[in-house]
Structure formats: structure tokens, C-alpha cells
Length: 157
Image 1 (cartoon, rainbow, N blue to C red):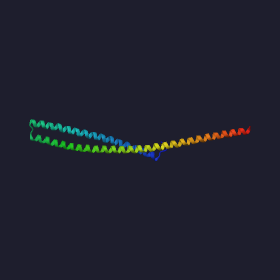
Image 2: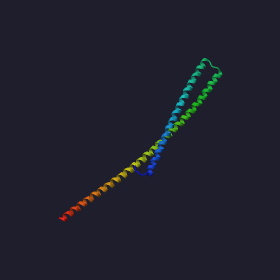
Image 3: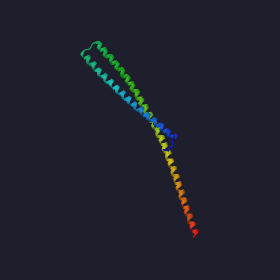
Image 4: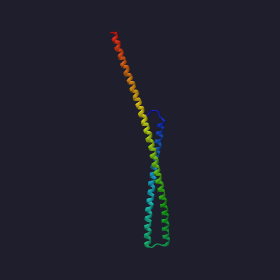
């Protein structure tokens, strides 16, 4: 990269920061998604176990009050499962959006890095040409001095 900070260098820095921020947000979203999946699995498993208990209680004989309590609790579990599914869907959407944002920032950063590489390559080529020009001029000057010396030494003889 060039020594001085250019607008392109600033863009690269800002885009890198934005990409890093998107990466952190994506990580958080993935963690939240995993937590939502875990919560849904736990609720679903608990509902199944509770439903099995109700089945066993019904086989043993259950009073109407107990049956109503079981039913109400199962209904509240079903509502909690529905909310957990909704939350899971929202978290999946957030992860997808986060992935798109990260990919977009990464694409921009790659494009800017490519531009910076081209800029640096062009600057290096200019420096190499300048160095070659100076070397050619020095060589030409050396040849002229030798020719003058040869001419001067022939005329003095």
C-alpha cells in the first residue's frame, strides 16, 4: 500500500470495520438461533413427556379436575411451543439477513482490495520505469564521458 492515506485506504478501513461488525452480529444471530432451537426442542420434549404422563394417569383413572389441569397445562405448552416456533423463524430470518450483509461487506472489501493492489502495482511499475530511466541516463552519461575522455586523449597525443 502507499504510504499516505488515500480515500481508497479510508474506504478499505471503513469497509473492513463494517465487515467485522457484520461478522460479530452474524455470530450473535447464530447463537440466538441455536438457543431458540434448543428452547423449542426442550418444550417439545417436555410436552411429549407431559402428554405421556396424562396418558398414564388416564389409564390409572383420573378425576375431572386433574384432567382439566392437564389439558390447561398442555394448552399453555402448545402456546409456548407456537411462540418458540415463531421466535425460531425470526431468528432464522435474522441469520439469513446477517449472512447477506456479511457477504456484501466482504465483496466490497475484496473489490477495494483489488483496486488497492492494482494501484500499488501501477505505482511500483512507475517507480521501476523511473529507476530504469535514471539508470539508462547514468549509463548514457558514463558513455559520453568515456567518449570525451577518449577524444581528449587522442587530441592530446
